Image (cartoon, rainbow, N blue to C red; front, side):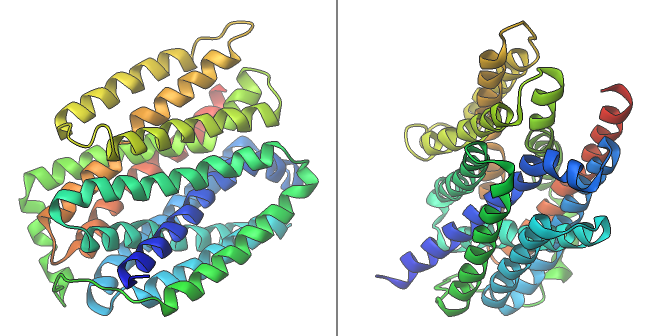
Length: 356
């Protein structure tokens, strides 16, 4: 098997586990609230710790990977994910849980950004967006499967699943250590000195502004959908987890279509389609009737499909603009995006606490 193919497979395995991690806290939040006696506002604080860790990881990976390569960056990040999973599964202390979630976020931030930058480096200009969409498909598979698996189990079995995922993270870390990284692009060795260039590029700043709100909306949907379905629609946790899976299913299927049937559609038209899907999904989600569960779940599916093109399209454009410092450029984009994630997640927690 060619080294490039092995590298792609390893990257897809890493992003799949990152997908699992992004829905893990939201999926087990009711269990964590019972175990540790958390209020809604404290739970919202946990959601803010995760993107803060993601923020640290996103800032760290770019300049470091541009200067030293991806090997140790990705391997260490996978181990951090394992620590996070173990903490979520076994911690009975709120402070220890917070620390583990921070590790969780740092590892996830590095994997999210570094795998995207690596795929961009490995791909030709005309294949960047398609390959980043494929990367998003594997992220979606991880995020889709976890709540679906948990919905078939008793809460007493959740820890076993979390332990298995932690072991897989350790195995992927070993894989990242031993694969080759066949990158043809010559990297800028002191890439952080070029950051002022980002502020002079208006198109790049628009991309950052777009992803600020994209990241915030994705976080709200991933983290609060289960609680919304349980509290507002009065369904049990298993039904809420199934509904969350449809959010990710919509995102995943749309990315499959974007990399295939919609491959030749212009970026502008793709984003227009996404806006229509988001609008339709929001309408379906907030219709509350005696038997509206399936309509609300379909709304989540449409919202997932509408959110799907955002990151792959914008990161593809970023990768084409800054090939020699792709890691640093992706770090900057992720910094802005995750700032939106942190701020709006906290505001959401406060609103849920006081307004329901």
